[in-house]
Amino acid sequence: PCAVDELKEAAYCQANGYKQPVACKWNDGVSKEYQETHALPKYTGCGSLEDASRRAFFRNQFIFIVLGLTAFVVYLWRRRKLVGS
Image 1 (cartoon, rainbow, N blue to C red):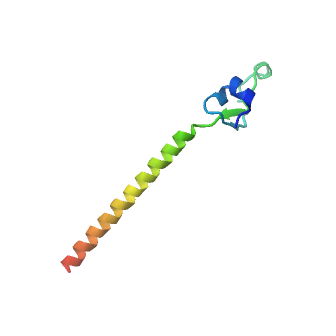
Image 2: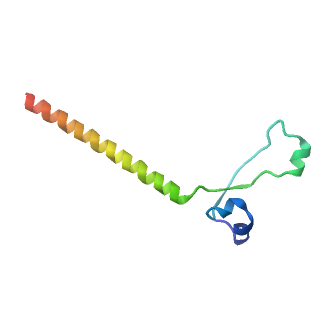
Image 3: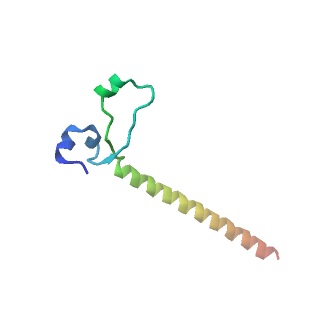
């Protein structure tokens, strides 16, 4: 979680109040003058926790539907095979 002073000042904390550390390095073509006058970010904002939860829910629903349809197809196949023999 972000500190109280970061919640007001840092852009990465304003979305949902959480941050995660990042390890950044300069690209090869960036000049030394630019590197001295600018800083790389140390943190980035976390994705929305609600979005992650929603994605997990729908992923699970999709998996359950696929499993259910597969089981139903196997059931129909076995029934047809048993009736035919």
